[in-house]
Image (cartoon, rainbow, N blue to C red; front, side, top):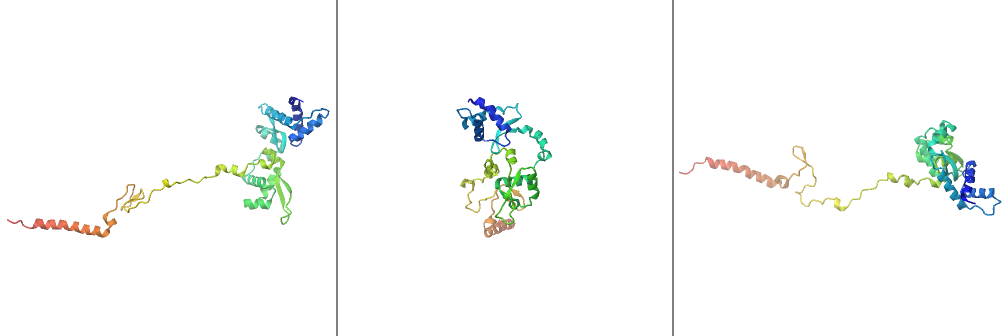
Amino acid sequence: MEISAIIPHIEVLIFASEKPLTAAEITELINQSFGFMEERVSQDQIEMAIQGIQEKYQEEFYPFEVRESGGGYQFLTKKDYHKTIAQLNGDKFLKRLSTAALETLAIIAYKQPITKGEIEAIRGVNSDYSVQKLLEKELIVIAGRNEKLPGHPLVYTTSKTFMDYFGLNTVEDLPKIKEVLAEQIVEGTLISAEDFKPVPETESEIISDLHVTESGQIVSQPIEPTMEEVNPIEGAENNNSESDSPDQTEQDSEEPKPE
């Protein structure tokens, strides 16, 4: 049978099914429908036909599309019409999830199956309200009880509605945490030996570019050390010798000149 003849039957099966259909399930249903045929339809033919159907409904003319979600293929409305469809289910689907509810949902999605106590241990706060809201929106379900923990607490997992809402087939399709946080990772700055200035060998070299004068002013020019700073004793002796010379000159000028 030609693929063009199979396509309408595949569309009918996906549209009428209450649950997502896999390619293997569609293949079996098609072969059962055409049981009188000698040549059976292969799964490869079904998958090729599904690709053609997906391309067909990608056109802007159609408000819905065929997507692989929830473990199989199903008709889903395009995101431009989600707000209109939400009117059928009341206000609960129009309201955005709070930050606390999103945190709780993310923990359940990545750690499922998980108890409420384990959720609170990760978040550090009480999560009764968030869990209740997620249950009301049918984004999570109660999957049973943990028989190994005291009191046998309830265990929560994500629901089929969660998988459909985010367009996932299995939990393995969730983005990896490393991929989500990759853009937030700050890499250290590499420093080479060339980035360091050599240590001065003599005391007369100035390391810093900023210097403080005796008056308390900050200047950018290096200050050469004075003689007192280099050798206070020699500086004092030089000052004394220099201070004596003017007096000696004055005394010499007062003595009378010989005739």
